[in-house]
Image (cartoon, rainbow, N blue to C red):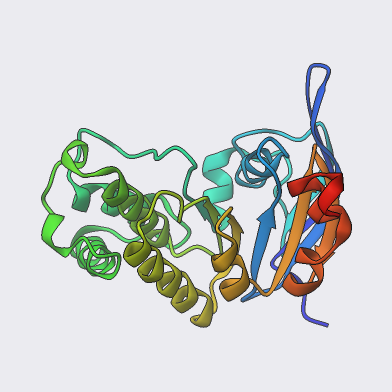
Length: 243
């Protein structure tokens, strides 16, 4: 049996008296796109913060293949091959778009320098639709283009596991179709992805399986069709009268 790219085992995160993530376990297979879904405030972004090292778990374990990354610093987890985008875009505002992506090349899983880094960064900016903004200061980009830039920077790290936190949010219909196709291409190329998303059309089109969180606990884990028809999931999203 192939070892999963990620194993989350009995993970819990407390913030004082608040339990944001409560005893959650799941696995992501190599090359799989897993949807992490649930109502607002259910703990999805906290889970991504735990996997990427922004937060340390209160209890539990996270393994990236055979490596225990549970309590490692975020920069070390990035070196092991985890890259991410953020729900609220985080870019380097004093740098150009090209320089932002070069930073991903330098500090990622497979490090590139000099001309190699520049060529890779230019190719990724083309790929995400920012070919005309290579030398544009990032604080001059629109919000949507900043999201594209953040994805290019994450891909520059040659990630073994890519975490997308509502990357499709805020896109207009044509941009959404482009975004879905881009993520589909990444999955088809073998990139392992965890996608936090509220766009259900994207979940249905892209995900191999889903984990559903509600109030910090896992309430479902399975195929997209099974999960989205689960009465407990419907109840969590829409209330008891729809379950």
